[in-house]
Amino acid sequence: MSRSIALVDCNNFYVSCERLFAPHLERRPVIVLSNNDGCAVARSNEAKALGIGMAVPFHEIRHLVQRHGVTVFSSNYALYGDLSDRVMNTLEQLAPRVEIYSIDEAFLDLSMLGDQLDGVCRSMRRCVTQWTGIPVSIGVAPTKTLAKVANRIAKKSPRTGGVLDLTDPALQERALRRLETGDIWGVGSRLKRKLAQCGITSAIQLRDASPQWIRRRFNIVLERTVLELRGIQAMSMDDAPPTRRSITTSRTFGQKVTDLEPLREAVAHFVSRAAEKLRHHRLITGSILVFLSTSRFAKPGALYRNSHTATLLEAVSDTPTLLEHAMRGVEAIYQKGYRFNKAGIILLDLHPEENYQATLFSDLEKRQRSERLMKTVDLLNSRLGRGAIRFGAEGIGDNPVWKTSARRKSPAYTTCWKELPRVIAHDRVGRTPYERDIP
DNA sequence: TCTGGGGTCCTAGGACCC
DNA sequence: TCTGGGGTCCTAGGACCC
Image (tube, rainbow, N blue to C red; front, side, top):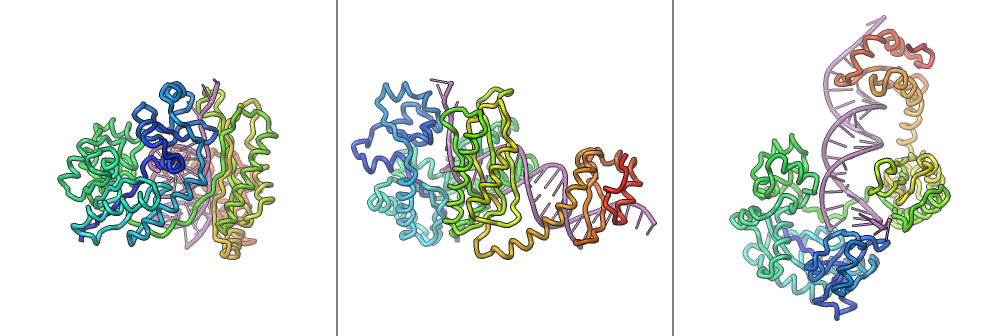
């Protein structure tokens, strides 16, 4: 049986949410702005028609907004999250397998429907609009990537009535001929440029490129895209919610910040917010990353970005411990003289609370061992050239056997290896290299 | 002058292990 | 007595997504 994957996507989602409570804004230009009212992150069709692009800074479109009486909202993520839940719950009642992909999109496995596909999708579309008030578009195809293509057309072309079935290969061919590479799911601006350098500008050209060549020249992700464009499933349906890998809290500041103290305050606030999220999900974290940066539009000399990761001895979820490490991180990377514009923290190495003991033990053991090693490694690499020679220890505990080796490809390898046979030979027998004179 | 926030996955190279 | 090959783990950085 051939597969049919549907992508259900809410139309101009944030705008549709706001319109639910302001029906008079139907058929009027409306936009929703990001935090700090910095950029337009959602536009109604009427606003798009005025030439307001996605993620455009508000100050660049202020004149359009004034001239055409565009209604402007600051974003209200609590509201959007609520309405998203309603849409997803509706879909789960209508289809057996639903993978929630983002706040406004879900993939549905409709493989069992056969020739009723189109009719079912149309009634599904009506249901969602009726029950939630949010208009959606639906694209169907044998793979997720093609379903994205189908959805795009369903949304843009009024003739489709908001639903497009692209399971027929001849239709796929026609659609891909008219699509640019940059409009394919997974191809961003960088890849689009790189592909163009290889003479690939349309989706059909990418589909017909050799997957092996694409993998060599680019990467495995793009190879999957090629396969998916051919109708071969390379991305599976996953209806289990993914386990969380990280928790971020960050903000750009309203004004530039130069002093350490306000940065410390901002980061302290991020830590308590993130720790709340952490506990809410019943997770603990094993490392915390702090980052500071100047505006990405700053001139090269005034540009500064840095981060500091603290690996905790024990995975935790309490604010004070995280705060302590975060503050140390801020101080480590703060540099006087820069005008900071953004800061944030990321909690990594997340584990469920109940796995606490197991995690703690294995991490501790590993860490104690590597701390002893690291000192030696740092010392030697500072003398010999970074990465020239690899050192490790065999065995754990009080009697590690030191061992050296090197990456063969390392350019520094040959010279160092030849110049230092005695050092290496000596380290092998079990005394730490601290005791040696290193040339 | 003013340019979002929160995620994921992959790769490369260093570190570690057998 | 001296030395190596090759796998896996880890992390920073890059690219992408909504």
